[in-house]
Image (tube, rainbow, N blue to C red; front, side):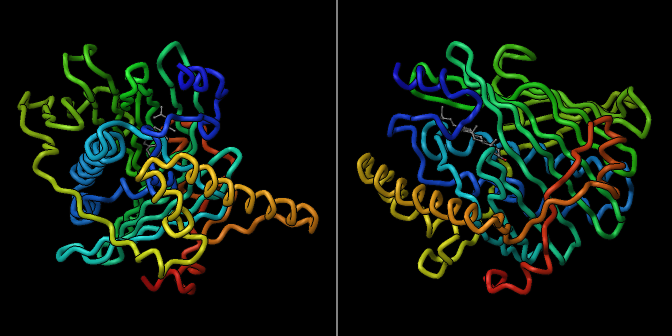
Amino acid sequence: MTFLRSLASSKGDLSSITAPPFILSGTSLVEYSKFWAELPDLFVAPTMILDKEERALAVLKWFIATLKGQYTSRNEKLGSEKKPLNPFLGEVFLGKWETETEGTTTLVSEQVSHHPPVTAYAIYNDVYGIELQGYNGQKASFATTTLNVRQVGHAVLYIKKFDEYYYITLPTLHIEGLFYGAPYVELEQKTLIQSSSGYWASIEYSGKGYFSGKKNTFKAKFCAPDEDSPLYTISGQWSGKSTIINEAKKKESLFYDASEHNVVPLIVKPNQEQAGYESRRAWEKVAAAVEVMDYDTIHVEKSKIENQQRDLRKKEKEDGVEWQRRYFELIEDEGPLREVAELAGVEPDERVWRFKREVFEQSSDSKM
Ligand code: CLR
């Protein structure tokens, strides 16, 4: 009950929630960017498809495939959704996937704002010439026993060979099962994927009992440029199986089956080789205390980090300087992103976080 009350009073800021120890996780939210590319084969697949329409469909498939990791992996591994650690400003999470066919896919994730929390990330594979950049924050509200979370931000996929962009909006979600102490995520509303080629897809989410009796269901329509009636409709469970219907031929076939794909684990440097601003190193003691549910130590170690951060902000204020983000910068959104957002009918953000790849590549952090 205390927990539910703390949720009710959290006023949009998820970091102010005091969760009971069994719901705490020792993983920082800055790590969650990895869920975009744990299936490197599907991530690079669109680069090999010459046909625009087929390519956009492959992007849709990759996107649907990422949802299971993004929204159900804590449940599957830890038994319920957990409250991640609230990243500090400047916290960085780095990793890479190494696979025989896809080669190296690199992940750079950085906490670029603390109040409100915003994480920016870049994921790229140079063998295939594909890159995802994005940033996100969350706005929460509480209703009776459900926590509603709206995501702020978007992701943009870029395919070099075709000089093609995909603008991806993020789904709204809510946390159910709070009352029973077994929280889990359910998605709602829509995601839009708009390609600069004109092809677009709209994905509508629903939980148990709306489209069907199953959880994690979705319905997507895939349309040609400037068209509203779908070329294909896709539906099913994003955490399980989905099917695709070719509307012209009225032919149905399998679209995606999550059980046929295994995530490729991200390779992260051992903690002792990481810099102090790297996530797992910085939170090491907190994570160890979470592991054994030692609430006092969690509190002591968290406070150390928070005080350090407070001192840093104070010093910056005194010196009249602002914290310098390491690998991202806030830029005016002009160029192609703005165009593709407009195509999507989405109000483009005034300013977006851009990955400073040159800076990253010259840093020792790029030598993983
Ligand atoms: C972060 C960005 C990722 C997708 C994603 C998945 C799960 C979300 C997380 C985001 C934000 C934080 C989140 C989490 C599920 C639960 C957690 C909303 C959007 C909140 C802070 C936990 C509240 C405490 C409990 C009631 C469990 O790409």
